Length: 445
View 1 (spheres, rainbow, N blue to C red):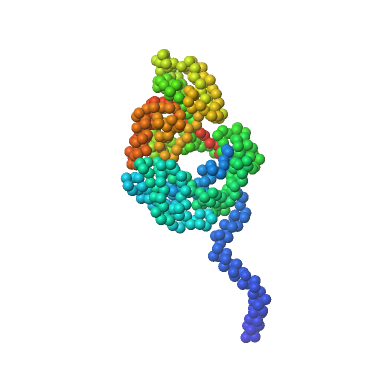
View 2 (cartoon, rainbow, N blue to C red):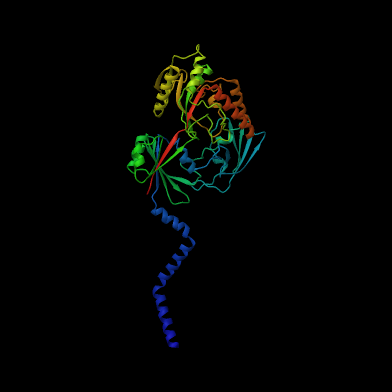
């Protein structure tokens, strides 16, 4: 019995001696898998996963990379919430507002690093904003000062901080390609997940659509959807209305069309969408905390338009020039021309203006931008001669816009901007029409 046990021990010893290297390597490998299974799994997924390929329309340079990309690469000192409020970003631990809202002390996180491994400090904040003074108190305290109270200040600090291609966000820029000075491709690499994102740029919508059809990209967004795309196999089409970035409107030159009743009659005579989601009522997003839904809507009303028009016999227009800033708006312009002729007997001349003469136009169908903050001072204040396209001069509007910039209390600001919207729509320097509908195409795999 003892001899059998001894024999088995000798056999086991010889086996271990012969296979010791393999056993040790197996033990080490097993330990690595046990303790580092998560990063090893991420590496395996990275090697086997294909990148997400997104097509974007437009000409962009290194200085105006689309915000959907820069927001993945880095953070600003603030972020904008869904209802257009400003809150602190992951870069900021806390904020102290002092000296009657003239000094903002940002206490920064002390454990953050740029994508190149260098530590993030207050010295890295590189905003260049007119009217604001930036002072570093210490590596993790930054003071931003303004000479007068400026309520939109925090919204200006949402632009992501970048050092060239280096950022602070969940994605790093792995590669950028250019063609003739414009972006051709941007590759983003995630810091903690498995899939790269490849953005490819195309100068027009037709090239973008072709790229999707040929398989160069797997996701695109279009302003109009070709009917044949609905029949494409392995393609998912999603539709959404973008109420956060821009709207279309007819802007009147109030120095040339200076009668409010005439402008209102023209507004009532313009056909408008019956889709409440698409319909725009004013220059502030319906998602904003300052939005006022109770304004004059100027619903399509031919009878009211004709009635108001007939009361202004001495001020009636016989003809009007309607400029169009974008070819995508030409169909809408033709509908407006037809309605004005049919209802008000006005002859309308449509011209496409790549560069509008802001001093001599009568009316222009164009897109208006929606800022994150409800501040509308640049667009409607009488002193803003370069950006107040309609040239409206209204003392009460001016006063409200000034107060809106100087009022910190949000509830008081809300009252100011809701009153501003009410008066602006009553004066009718513009006829607000629609928000853009976006069609997103995704290739199913």
